[in-house]
Image (tube, rainbow, N blue to C red; front, side, top):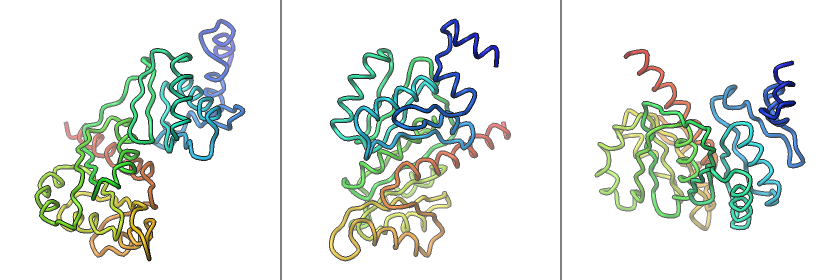
Length: 255
């Protein structure tokens, strides 16, 4: 305790960093940021930008960077992105920003991104599924996994799915994003001995649209696979990361 107080007094530790050390989270006007979640759960807290003002998003991102040297954000609007880039450029000028669709990963130079000896395959049925898959991919990249991305292999032209079967089999875990009737994860799960995480996407129209049919189809799959909620890219990426980390640990022990 005294060491923390001395560090705050001499300026080598900010009050936010000290609060994160003591409580595991930091409280600000925009809410609480769980700085200890990665150590406790294996997956960092992501800042869900949807429903927040640009000022709240900026405050939470700056808190994340100050306490963990990185900020992972999802569902960003154009206005929020503009505010974030401007503010981070001033407060953390040396930070790097990696954007994928409406998700972003910001890192300070002090962060050393981990490296996992594991490959996560991320597969999309069509172009409309890519933004949700991008969110999942950014979570996996943050964890240091190798990513093998395969896009636009939906079952409407099954040959393009079968052409990639060997590539799917090489991954340690697969995230398969699909809308409409959500058939692609089921088909792929029937071809591989790799864990498959189905990611239903809110594409499609009419009865069962907005991802409902895709989710029901994945839940009713007769092949062994799991499924997350509609558009839950962060959750799919988190699940795949936990599997990849287990694979990495097993390979370390075997070496």
